[in-house]
Image (cartoon, rainbow, N blue to C red):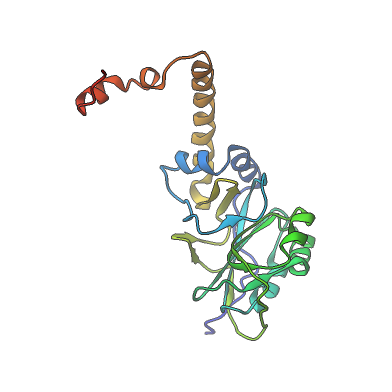
Amino acid sequence: MSRHVVVRDFPRVDPDIARGLQEQGASTVHEADGRRGAFRPEIKPLQQGARIAGPAVTVSCHPGDNLMIHAAVETVRPGDVVVITTTSPSTDGMLGDLLATSLRAHGAIGVIMDAGVRDAAELREMGFPVWTRAISPQGTVKASPGSVNVPVTVCGQVVNPGDAIVADDDGIVVIPRERAADVLRKAAERTANESDKRLRLQAGELGVDMYKLRPLLEQLGVEYR
């Protein structure tokens, strides 16, 4: 059996659940899932203000080689988030505006790139959301095999094809497909609770009182003078 595969079909997180997770945002979803799933912050948004959520299409590439991103395009469905990593660290510009145009034409709503991108201005002008490790003019080749829609590890998190990816200005979170509905429910409850707290804080109530922190401060030996 080949060590390199392109998996065309796989179960995806439900689109309605993905839309709900997008509304909640990365930080709220992370908290709702027991503070799990957050990517380390090496990968940063290329733009400001974008917020996306959708099922992961995963791509494992050889560093400096974007062959498998091209191979992944035909597996993309509307609403997918393409998650790209390399088998060893790379900052080469593996994705530019032409490849992004192709991905978007097949329904991708954004890319998480654990390597570099190029054509940064054009990608911003397109309004195609990208989170990336680096911006680099360094060109790439199309020569080395890899795999599409297999489990990958990105910034400390395992991503399986079809898992929910939530990304915004705060960062990136992955939610395993099987628990995405439960996480959405908890996130919505958290948002409702935060709305009440926001009103109380706007009215001047102190956080140390709202969260009942004065006994803890005393227990920790903090003195007011």
